[in-house]
Image (cartoon, rainbow, N blue to C red; front, side, top):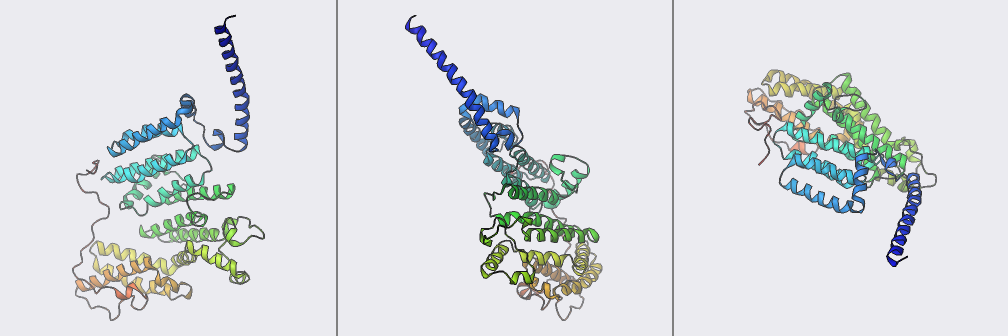
Length: 443
């Protein structure tokens, strides 16, 4: 047997040995990965195409992903928005359990790309695409609280403080009722409001934190866990802004109040005996007065400190005040007054303003709610209502009251409010797209 044949046989034996070792070791590693919940089927939904792509790339996945990332950034600079999505899909196929690409590109679609369009319907489309992209991330990475929270945050943020949030909310409700794009609009309560979608994802994130015993990575655990209560509070607030009053409004504030109480009680997570409040996994903020007095000074300090991080006692008081019949009656009268004012029906506006002022003041005469007099959002609302009322009287040459409606009630900005300004005109409809911009991008 010549040397060449010997080498070939040796190589063949080495290959067989390596392959046999790989089979046994690979099976053992896979069992351990499943035991530690690190296997693909443990992390989330298994995608056969993704597995095939990873197998084909073998050890060059990182190189391939780097080139694809560069392609995405280049397309982003050139504003080739619709060409980005296939490249993103390729990245997530190769690295489905790498969280950063999911979060970054969902944010890129829901914020950067959405804001690059002038037409509000195009902005809405990209917000929906970014949100659905995050939902795919959650499906392939189950139980990852940071991904679940961020999915909820897109619903919570884009439908509340965006300049075109009024259009977004109307479009969302329409799509929900017509069962269009259920992947984006459906929620567990089957309610046509994006704040319930936000609540579902925030609540799922909280459950993942509690069940895993692992805190979120990008935010302190106390503010993180407060977001379900914030979502329901925003829902109740927008009910009033959109003219929904009566039992639905009261029920919304009641749900928000109960959710804040649930958060304050530490989500019913078992307390660690002999461990200080500072080192508890989930912090308890809600105590009866007598129960609180029995706590030692260190525990009281940390309860107050963690509560102040999320303004817990402010929100409990604010939500409770908003749920009273006096506040509901005041806000309904102010809503009707503002609508009449915008429509030029000044007599109705004056009557509704004068109906609302004493109801609104009466809420802050209750000792439990007097601290809310210093609340900036409440002061801003009150200042706007008062100025509109006094301006209408001035514009109609009516006699002004001897005292401003809120004089003496607020202790800061309201006492420095500007004098009435005449010649008020009805406001234009909010968030109306300019003619001729439908479907165009910003240049």
